[in-house]
Length: 375
Ligand SMILES: Nc1ncnc2c1ncn2[C@@H]1O[C@H](COP(=O)(O)OP(=O)(O)O)[C@@H](O)[C@H]1O
Ligand SMILES: [Mg+2]
Image (cartoon, rainbow, N blue to C red; front, side, top):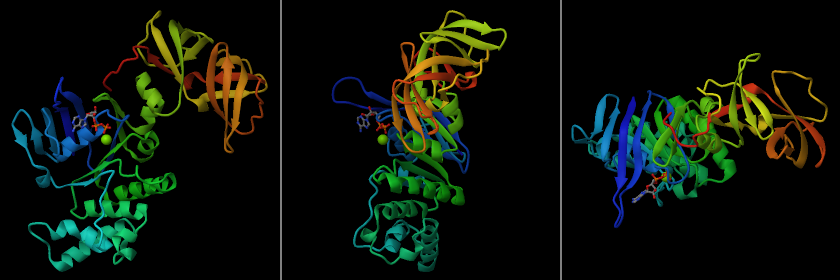
């Protein structure tokens, strides 16, 4: 549906070289899918989205929507933004004051060159207002809406033109945490019910994991990994991705070789040998980083049953924080400090001796180039 190929967008600067904000960005989004550009501030998410919208003119690449080329450097095509028919909602969405909710949502249709009839406008507007659950507030002054309602109105205004593609740039970031959580569900529902292909930009990994069919993680202008949320979380290809998506423990080590009895890689680390299941093409002697999520660091006051095929260590509880539905423990294993998220039934106090087990299946081994590779 949307195809972005080798997109490069630069900003000229007064002095010094141009900022290469998007570098060889490529991805495909099938019709009806929710696709997210995720990465830290300044990594080029907004630039990529604005290039798709036609608000920035790329230096090279191709952008195609439903088979229609809207930008191509090779063929000299640049379709202006108002001819692309995309819906857009930005972080700083603007609701027009002194207008009702209805009038706000109807505005894009009212100013259209071939304006629909009054009845058509009424039908379209009421249908999008009901999609965002604001139909009962159609006659209210728009400024009297809550933050979340205003955000839904901005969404309705983007949807009323029946765009082929919906572009959302951090649309929830101005809302408070509770409302943001609720709006996530709303967004997911609206996107699903309308089957509208959506490109979403956020720096919030939780939001990206919750909403997306697929995520492109960006860093320094480049896409570093593309995949479904679960793959990105469970199988990060680089330390950057593992670190950016959620909390993780990193343990550096050296690859010893494949363990014949378990068919797993044995990696020598400061806390002892760790067995790791991995498809990565390691070779003996090479460096590796092992990423372990806190929820995969199992703790027990009693010894685990001896099992040659798993990673069991002795440790000491350093700091324990009870959080209600779980307990976070910093556990010292040798010279390393591991972060664990455990069930609240664990009653270890600070300084207590603990047994630590890490399932080899839950260890993510990353070839330690520390660099960024295309996904
Ligand atoms: N109009 C501009 N002029 C010059 N540099 C810009 C402009 N907009 C963005 N940049 C730079 O381009 C890079 C990417 O920015 P942006 O796409 O806004 O990142 P993100 O949305 O991921 O935070 C940053 O280094 C930013 O400073
Ligand atoms: Mg941005």
